[in-house]
Length: 356
Image (cartoon, rainbow, N blue to C red):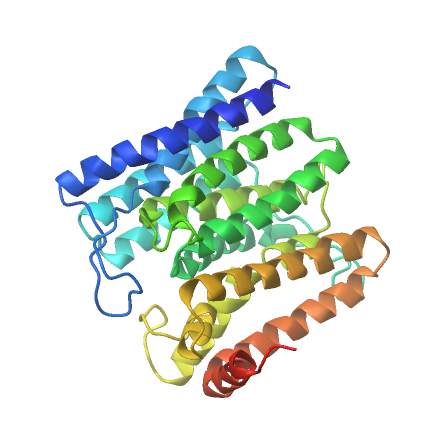
């Protein structure tokens, strides 16, 4: 019950603090300026992340003082490092190589100190349990770094990264509830409440035509850390509440899009992290969909992916079937990214199709 109360406090705190932080950011020129590949046409403060995680940390300290729920210190430290790094990057652009090193530092803390290790992938492909053995630590570190970057790359339209994260943590919350992991459920509820407060100012809606604030690198990289932590800890011993294959489906959207972009850029002999307009969300924009419509269509797809992974696994779809289907999804999305012109033309035809 106290977790519910703290979640409401977190929601209210974010709703109150974001307008204040926005005014301060505008006053001191801490803004994401329009231009280039960006979809906004006026300066927008990238302060959503610093507000979300400040509120989350304070709420978790409060939760620890009155209950037996203890927010993992490794996650505390990792979030502190990544959010501060992101905030500095939002104000004074940091060298990408330095940020990459920070990602590995944070991943090392989560894996080596926090114990967020992928020991097994389950019977993912039907050939028996895939145990990682001595590869557990390097593989887990690589996965954490990958997820941080994938979420950061996804943050391209109003409400997209935050909305997808809310969906992902909705599935995590259901899994924690069904599995009796009340500690994780309390933490997740508070984080989701803070996200909802942020999305009120970030997502487009009938009463808000443009985002008033962005996540910023502090927010998108912090979210990546949160997804990586719970994706691993909720699916591994000692208290797994999700099958690894279910996690793969739930977090699929940023994961497969980042891989598709990597392949497409390498195919074109471009740097792996070179910016371009081949993200999944760009296909919808280039096909003529508005920002709001693009975001909600993509979020609907994210919900469907979660249904396949979570509900399918719970109701008896064999793990190898889900595993191979995920591999096919991954390869299909990569092909779609490499040959994005055809997908854009298909989306344009769908958009022009008259309503029944």
